Image 1 (tube, rainbow, N blue to C red):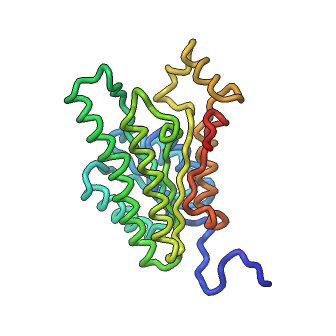
Image 2 (cartoon, one colour):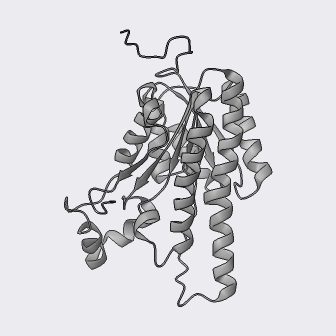
Length: 265
């Protein structure tokens, strides 16, 4: 029996020196993702929506050279398609797509009026689900034409499984992202494109720093038996592995990253 790091007769997917597009890379987890891939020796294009200065700081801090920065409104399908086309043009192709961009604004059903409720659902669906779908479709087309395989990794959420009472559209769209990833995993496997998702629990970023103070912070940390929340680098390390050649057999998975704060059965 012959064992090999790649299936005989199929092209190898590179371990480093890959061309990577990270959506929503201005700060927080997006910045940690870009840093992880750049430190791995990959060429990274960082996408941002509105936070240009923070995105510029992300790119400026990446190790290596030729990293790029692109803006797009992922709620607009044509903008998502343009983003992939421009990123592939800048990097001479695309090997890895990380779908990180998302919106998450509160809209509790009991206290939110209908117009705000409808707007929240439209925004979450347009960015979190449809933006992810459109980027994935366009990136897959490039990967198929290249003929060397590829990776798509989606950032989902623990909230897809345990519920988000104050952010129901966020939980629902992240559940849809998990389902989308599994459908794409089956459809794209013949082209050696592996697709996986991660489902993080609470992790510390600038956006949620205030929530980690005082009693609310203690309650949030108490959700995990480790008594803490994650840091973005822990999520980024898992994404880096799922995007690696060794992780091809994990295609279709939804990887829980929540410190045992929510256990699925």
